[in-house]
Every structure is written in C-alpha cells, then in structure tokens.
Length: 416
Image (cartoon, rainbow, N blue to C red; front, side, top):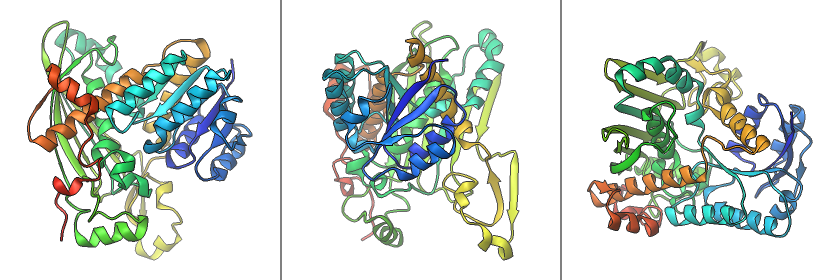
C-alpha cells in the first residue's frame, strides 16, 4: 500500500476532526502542518496517535515542497489566497498528487470559479470534502433500497437539516469572513446531502439538474440584545453592525434528464438548537417507501445528575456542540465516522494513490456554492431563482449577498 504524505493547512476545529478520522484510515501520514496560529495541538495529536511526526512549516510553499497531498482546512476567507500560493509552488517545481478543500469551496461563485481555474491550470487533481455524502447511514440506506429504487423509482422528496447552538470561533460569526451565516456555514451540507439522496444509484453526483431555488433566512435569536452582548464578549463580533442569519430554510427543484421528472429537496439549518448538541437529519420519500436518519439517536445514553455534573470536564467529548453536562445525554463514540469524515478521507486516498477520481471534485463544490448563492438571492429578493435562465446564471457569477458584504441590517432584524 502506497503511503501518501499529507500537508494540512489550518489547525482549528475541523483539522482536529479530520485527524480523528485519519486514525481509522490506512496509508496516510501527516507530514506537515501550517496554520495562522502554531498548530502545536494538531502536531501533538498526530504524534500521539501514530499518524506521523509532522513538521510545522513557516510557509505554504515550503509545506507543498515536502508533501504529496495538500489539505485546505483553513478559514473560508483565506481559501483563495491559499490556493494562489499552492499553485505558485507547483509552478516553481513542487510535485503534488492532489489537493483537498473542506466545504464550502469558497464564499461566493467568483472566488470558487477562480480557485477551480487555478488548480486546473497546473493539472492538479482535486477533491471536495463534503462529509455528509459519505455517511455510512446514507450509504446503507441506498444499498438497502437499491432494488426498491429500481422497481419503484428513486426518491422524489428529501428533507435535510443541520442544527446546533452556534459556531466555535469568531470568524464563523463574521459574515464578511465566513461568507454569510448559517446558510453558508451549514446550508452547504444540507444542499449537498439532499441532492445526493435524490440521485438515482449509479448516476454521478451532479446527474440531477438544478432548476430553481426558493429560500428564506432570518435572525431569530442572535439579533436579540442579550445574545448580541454575548457574541461581543465571547468573540468580539458586533451583530448591531454586521449581523448574519441564524436560521435558513428553502427548497431546491431538480430535473432528471433521463425522464424529465422534477424532484424536490427541502433544507433547514439553524444556530439556535438548544437540545443535546449537533443534530443532522435526513428524510427521503419515494413511491411506497421512506427513510429517516437522526444523528441524536445514539446507541449509548448517559445520565448525569446535578450532584455529579461538576466532574464532567468536557461536554463535547460526548457530542459536538453539546450544550449540557447533566441530564440524559446522547453520546456518539465515533463522531468522525458517523458524520462521514472517515469515508471521505478513504475516498480521497484511493483516488490520489491510484490516479483515479474522487466521488466529489471542485466542480461539484463550485455547484454547491452556486446553489448557496441562489438561496441567498432568493431570500434577499423574495422570489424564486430560476437557474435555467441565462440572465440569472450570469448575475450569480458576480453576486455577493448583502449579508456577506456586511450589510445584513438591510435584510435582517436586529434589536435596537
């Protein structure tokens, strides 16, 4: 088995999640790290868990010269500049077998298209990381229902959701840096998994053709004075000036090019879910059948009473975005695998080690950005966005949502 040396750009939350996943993947050595802040924690984790003895580099160019695959796990606002540096290093002679970018590919369509153009200008194979498409629960559902799909037809409606109490870091809350609010942060997951769950088995991920998007966004919790003050104190983000949405919902209509049938995917996301922690939900409905997934339905439950709660050191050791340390708690013993991080890394390894193609590439990531921008446009204008209209397609190419521009007060409620 060929060993691929990974170089990871970024040392924050998602990097640590991927390192947990890599503990379950063979053939990958974490050889290098670089981050805005020295990624000492990530390096220590890699060494402790036998993933390698990564060097912490001072420049992206130096990192690229000493690895086989580069993983972009840095914040959204850094992505375009990071790709520019990677491509420049390749032009200067560095040899890479592939490049990975964590979702979302970019903050808007212009950035995403530029990133695709740059990596393809140097012939660099690329993989887009959307973990939820790789969830074993979704794979098992599609396998179990394959014969049903063949006889009755694939699903005609999906409902996807992702909710938690809010992001970890300040830049996630800043729409100018992150690209928006919860729609940009988590809507990209729901758009992708809903689309994929509708797709007939054996067809590529972009087989169904997006036709139209209707969406709505709102600032329901974090625009209230109490929570505005909390954001300012915790993260230095001021939602009286540059608010972002904490709730988003919508419907995407797709067309099956083989049959002409239209199918629909609903999505809902929020940053104000106050139950056990992160909740991913997926439902599918077809003629004569249905399926449902809820990641809070854990095989393990723990109860902690008030008298024992002070002994709990880290609530998130049990579940991402956990908001409680007592009561009846859901515990997911292997979140990285549950959410699809393990399988997406295995998919990327197989592609780059053999010269094959990953399930998802940056063209797919670009299309998810296009759908996200269409959702913002729909919410902003109060109309359904027709993706088949040439004028609309051209408008989306340069569209930057008001919320992403830092002008969220023009479309969101903020308590005076």
